[in-house]
Length: 453
Image (cartoon, rainbow, N blue to C red; front, side, top):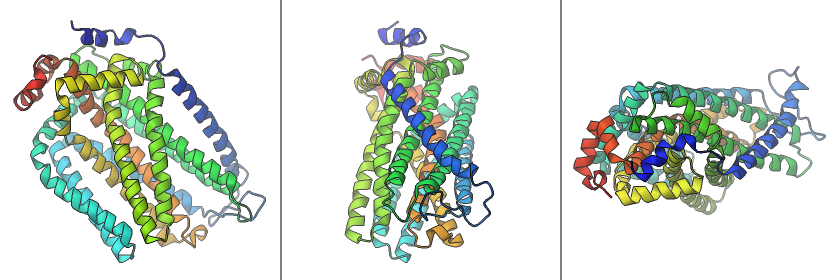
């Protein structure tokens, strides 16, 4: 047995918590979130006799009055995000090839629709940006059509494992429920925080500080939930690849929640910091009346989005390594990437469209969820939003809720693909035993991968 395979076989016996500092830091963050939430949720406890139409501010000043329809907005956002994400997972499992085409076409239609809307509303800077992306995605669809057959085979292979081990789907659904519950908790906390701290007579420093922390904490905890799911699933997919365990779900979850939990918190923190920065740039762009500044912020947001996409892509392979080797985040990332480059698998990764498809699917769900929030504000016209100053906040909260929910479900698929690549770099011959159809396609297209290093 090669050294790499020996490490895979010994992964269960690895002891010692990796990146413990990150786990402790996340626990402090969670404790602070709970503390702020307790203060915010007291608003509902002390105001249990409110009626539809408004909730009075609980500050010493006359402040913000949230209409209780806000609960309905966020509730609908959660329901739509949950429903669309679960529906997408079920449809992909039944018709993978169709869903690849449908996701591309649906994303292009939505982007063109948003472009037309912005032109109608005379929001030209944003309209131009969306028009550029609409055209780019349309061109990408035609450029990438030749890669769809391989993406279909990879997707069918992953779905085959999902059907053989239904625990993967169950884990994805449980993760979605947990993410949904946390999103509801977050939104109730946000509303309660505004009720408790907003004031028209002061600079709202306490409110701003609380909101900055809540948004960052939401991003970080959402990523932790997603990557605990990812590492658990990666352990299952790796076990199936090497045919080393008949019941890999429980041992994989145990490692994700113990020895590998610090590494999960570390990698999640990096993503959360970028998402956090992108969120506030989005707020600034949506609130700006200066066309040049809005255009500049759009460019900055796109650049940050590219960095975020690259880090998420890299994290997929790093966390597959964490699940397989049981090492720290940085050690696993280095080892995994070295193996992938030595084997030449980066060429195959570049030709794979599944992550692109899932990214477009995430944007599709997030845009539809935020559009629901916007339309509700437009129709209901609540008292607290007469000037429209709360529209960017509510729309973006709906957006990130939809995005986080879909990302949790997409992990079930993306994890299977990424883990297969990492395992392929470790031992390509094992794939010939477990998935001969996929092995043959890889052998014909990328012969270097299945040869010795």
